[in-house]
Length: 466
Image (cartoon, rainbow, N blue to C red; front, side, top):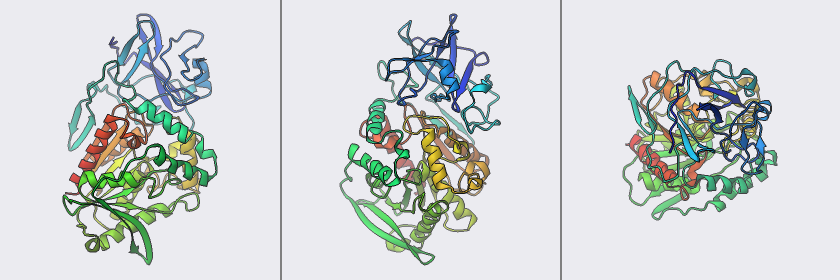
């Protein structure tokens, strides 16, 4: 591997579609470090930049994508918050950017739609210092642990690239559920999303008993699905809220995920069901989940769990609901949660109101669509129970474990939420998994790194419930 070190004060990036690509000069040559194919969301090969703007080679179509076209049409580019890696075509080696680029000069003409001026090109708060912590190390500060999780690098694999198995996972997801699926009728979207369970089949672990049940709250019966391992490690419970943008998904789409969570944690896991948008927009889903939490606590003895040891968990939009339900429980003086276990939470919908940058398996158009479906009145998008990072308060929330993915456009939400919890005195652990993309838990049978991350998430959720 050829390593090129550079002075971050002299580095630059160009923003496109609200994301950034790094531009690196080396020995008089200038290179685009990394990007995403505008056609299929796959990686672009590193290309040499010249005065004419020729930049990258599209791997799917074999044609160059000019830099000027990238900027003018706001095609998305991969975020590299801490580092990036790419291939030098002349040398055939790899360039690893080992330091975070901050205080850099943005190209204002390339700003993505919906980007707020006070934030950086990826939506994060600007930093004034260079973080020189090497990748794959752990930083601990006042109860917060931020881990770039260490994994051995395979021969021929560079940091900043997809983890082994992820590229196959992306291709299979896109075949089963094309990136423009959200343009189809809602019922077809839901059938396609359920079809991912056929594309990526997993069995229910042996010894896990599954029961469909319901709990009562405010005169309503709220459906839940209970997963109980044969050998319980304790009386704690993990309540799981599925992702799916509030629009697609069901108890069945995350059936084996929650079953595995029960098996790996050794605790009772409960999948919460809820009404979905666009038929039932905000606040229907979060009210259903808050009601289900309240019902589970009220019927804890019947369910065989300790009401003082309940953790709320979820992925993506489900993680949003987990955070919001934690806030609702605090604000309404409701159940006291033992913890929150979150996977790639989306916590600021204001940056998706008019679209945004694409990332593997999560396009800006998809996020804009989910935002419109979930919140009918645009004036409510910034409310605390929709976009906690915009107007929420973070005191009095339970300890949190947050699993982020390096190549996920929602990683900035995880980082910012961890900072807000820390500043409010809440214990939080954020782990950024290298080489992973959004919704990667479905790849646990393809990618050893996902399997490891999923195992650690389950164990950490169990620890919060102990």
